[in-house]
Length: 227
Image (cartoon, rainbow, N blue to C red; front, side):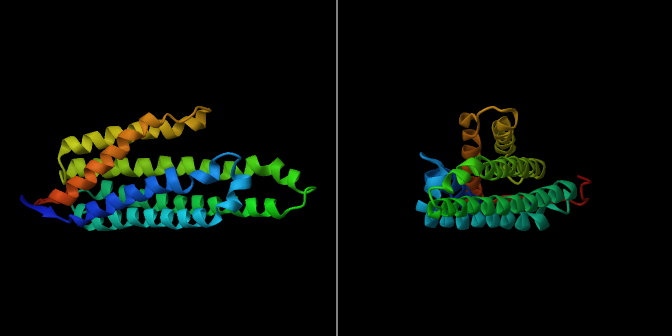
C-alpha cells in the first residue's frame, strides 16, 4: 500500500468557507428577521439583508456539494458504500437547504404583504403568521438533522480511510452526535441547547485547518473494500 500525503489542501479551504458562511447566515444575517417584534414586521425592513443571507446559504450548500464531489473519486474505490451515502446525503441536504431558503424568502414576502395591507386586513396576516413561520422553522430543523447526518458520514469516511488522524475523526463524530441531539430537541417540544452545537463548530474548524496545512493522506490499496 502506498501513501500520498499533503494532497488536496484546498478542500480545507472549502470546509473553512462553509463554516464561516454557516455562522454568518445563522447567527448574523438572519438574526434581525427573528428579533423583536418578529418577522411580520422585520421581514420587510430587512428584505435586502435576508436576500443576501439566502444567497450565502445557497453558496454554503454548493460548497458542501463541492467537497462531496471532490472526495467521491478519491474514496469510492476502497469505501464505495460509505462514499455513496455521503454523496447522497450531501445532495439531499442541499435540496432541503434550497427549500429552507425558499421558505425564508416567503417570510419576507409575507411581511411585505402585511406592511402594505390595510388596518382591517392586518389582523388576518397576524392570525396565520405562526403557520407561515412554522414551515420555515421545521424545514430548518430537518435540514440541520440531515446536514449533521451527512457530516457524520463524512467523519466516518475520513476515519475508515485514514485521510486525517483518526483521533480528529472520532472527535468529529462525537461532535456531530451532540449536534444531532441538540437539533432534534424541538421535535419533542424542547428548546435547543446551543452548548451541544459548539463542539461541531470547533471540530469543523480543526478539520479545515488540518487539511489546509497537512492535506489528505491518500492510500492506494491492492484490493477494494466492500464498505
